Image (cartoon, rainbow, N blue to C red; front, side, top):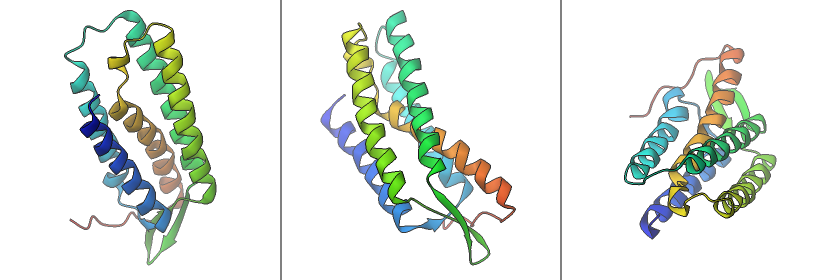
Length: 155
């Protein structure tokens, strides 16, 4: 992956973390659109590679790890009512889980490459995207149980 893509993905992660740490209205589509876009970008980047069975297996394993850590992050996220609509806010525990996510992601990725995965098949957009999708599923479930409406899109 080239440096520009890494910087873009890292910038998006920083933006999401800072915005959610401050607390923000919970707009339903904002929860899942960015992760889906990142996954599509990642898959698009893999089109040019001749993926082996090992590559595909490790993509699934790393994807499942990402979803699990995303769900764990969402479990530490506060969803609350403010001004008649849902809001979400990351907590200190969420930041700890983000740190664990990064460490585990690098660890599992290194293990995958050591076990034969093509390093070019490690897709940061897919990894971050599936993690945010795991987070989205839990946040959307928490939101649905609250009975409080989502905030309207600002766009």
